[in-house]
Image 1 (cartoon, rainbow, N blue to C red):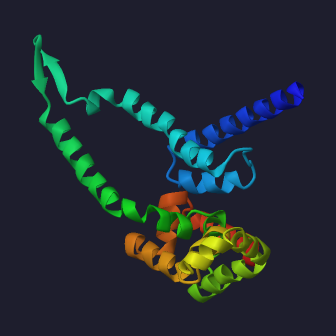
Image 2: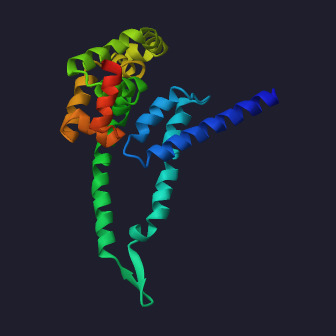
Image 3: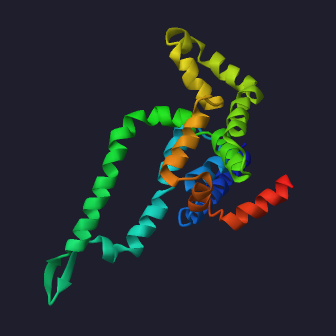
Length: 227
């Protein structure tokens, strides 16, 4: 029994190291580190509770944050020495003011964290949208395939509803909430596409900025799978 538990612990450590490698690499590339972590979690499943995983997804990013602090300490610390005297760096204070200003919107939308997680933090949303966007599918095709995910995951959705039957009976709106955890909300597809175009102009510009898929790479990808 002890040997089995030791093996499981060792395997969990290996999984954590693998997740750390993916986080460390993708954090410094023009791609979504969180998106890749979501996808990897479906392959490398931890033997841990959801509460632990929620904490792990936050803590694992501390390494990348610490690396930034170490590498750019001289540019982040607003004080310096000149002729033996401590001086203030106006340019660094200006930088920190901008950082604080950029953080304020996060504080404003933080009460919507549960809603955002239920709608967007699942691998179905990430994988389906990325594949279809990369292949140049129309909005109608993307949204139709997006909704079809609920048919494919009908058993998982119904099992989750059954698990929370008492809560849903008391608060019927929770049924829609749990739909977004095991499945997808039909109105999320158009909303995501609209948001991408508002922020990036086009879906191709989004794929290049976030995932490094240049027009040439997209063309090769589409020729490979569509021709």
